Length: 106
Ligand code: FES
Image 1 (cartoon, rainbow, N blue to C red):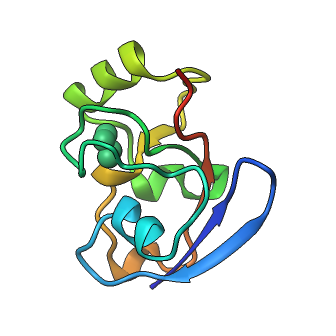
Image 2 (image 1 turned 45 degrees about the vertical axis):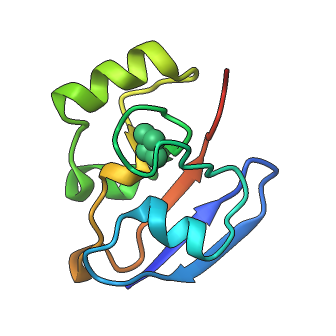
């Protein structure tokens, strides 16, 4: 599946993701700017914070309870469409997904 990231400076990066990896892993493997993934995908650091494109929020779904707490306490510019990229598992259904990178904000 192909995932498009919009980096913090506005650069658009489309990468090939593997099924079952997370959007954070796909971003790291392709050196997408702004995705740090400091906790290695353990849903702790919020350095993989993204805003999901409006066309994709339904399909990606909302943040889980723990994820929502981490966003609340660790991230800034949190919106209804905020997700931690490490908690988005890539499937074929997400081919074409667009994520705007917020990344580390504190
Ligand atoms: Fe740390 Fe996603 S990589 S919360």
